[in-house]
Length: 272
Image 1 (cartoon, rainbow, N blue to C red):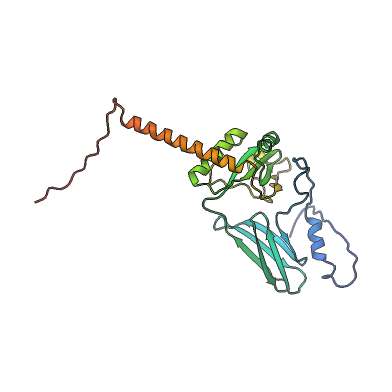
Image 2: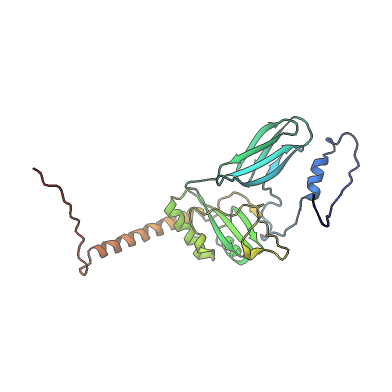
């Protein structure tokens, strides 16, 4: 039993017909779900509304999105609310996929979404402020997705023209981070950003009320940035030049007169 002072919020919904037809469960979800409004940081050429995920059936509610306990996959849990068989499509905009299936009355369904792995065509720039974002767009690097990970701090996702190999992907991330003031320690091909809808639990971001800020999805277009092809050529050439320079230094060190050439001796057992 809960103890102490309890605060409740109650809403009366007059309706005709059955409670299923009046969407009482959905109205209750909307009552207890916070719907904040945010002012965008872009000048207005992006879409006016976007969605983290959506469901096309009014009787199906997505209750939970969380990380799997046995790995990095995502768990999406939903249920049917009206006691009737229905078909629903859940569109997962953040993962670029969707699922369609049939729900039995009051059925709970759990989806497991594989976390992306391997080489890819994205770079995430971490710890950007609004001034850095403005310079990023002015230089032709419009993000395909933008998260506000804490008040005034952002992660920008850039979609490249090609899939970069791992080492080149890291070099591209480091180049972009150095140019636009992003966190260099987070510049790596394996870097994954924070997921919108979850909280940023770094101690320094704890609010005065003891809670942590939610990660907010600010922009989601999925589009390639305008300078993608030019940057691909530039970063590829710079990476090759750097590797050639490193190889030349290794060769010089190998032939250095102070050290002399390295001799590799092999021995073999005496033959009878």
